[in-house]
Length: 320
Image 1 (tube, rainbow, N blue to C red):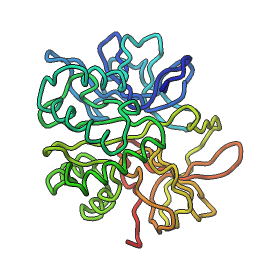
Image 2 (tube, helix red, strand yellow; image 1 turned 90 degrees about the horizontal axis):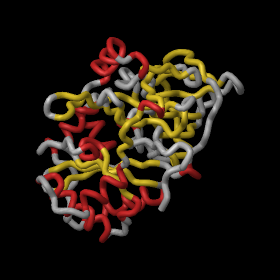
Image 3 (tube, rainbow, N blue to C red; image 1 turned 60 degrees about the vertical axis):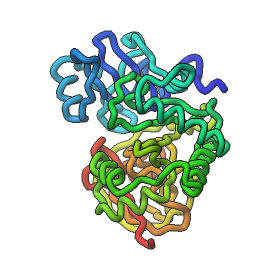
Image 4 (cartoon, helix red, strand yellow; image 1 turned 30 degrees about the vertical axis):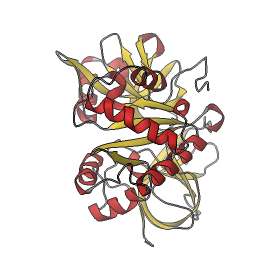
């Protein structure tokens, strides 16, 4: 399966490495004037790399590498972008997965990956549709690391969710226990209370545990599934309201997309992973985010995750 376009082969869940040794996670499907939309995740140190939080990343780029700061005119937002000419290594999850699976496991996490993939295969998931991302993509995993899998294509992703659900029911993998869920909650920095957060997470079947190690699956759209939007948007201000989900077929996309029964903002997009797959068709939700107006059509939409930390922004089901 060829998942990459030859003219712009960069996809979300890839990592790109610059000549200065900085490693960015790709977050955008589109070419931004020969630049790749991304976020700085790893900075070199004497042991290889260490992970940085958003604030540290922004500070470092401002002080030392301002060429990688980027303001998108299109969506009126700040993130990072790297010119294709500045990329020295393009880390691709599907190649990395093959590499790790075709040799002996070098640590406990790799051993668990070697156990997990055949389980997913047994429940109908093709290895061809998977990739290995996160810390394992660049061999920076620790004993406490998660296994982060990319799944290419909407159909393959839904098959993978079903496989996770069936494998949990069969007892070959486990749903997240309280401590793994708590850890997940703390990392996510969600606006929801813990019990609300856990209720939403448990029914997504996009994460589970294998021998007490958390793994998750994240979807990457295929070329024919990406909806290109070249319109310009302007931020108008925050809004919180209740509405009903009328279409959830892109709920696990990045960004997640929900169509809702609200005249003012009939579309909700979530750029924060916490609210991907958060609500299902027919459910009543309370949402809080930033209203953006399409400068061509005048149509408005709500953005959840207008900043990476998404402070004060959320989606939650209220008719549980």
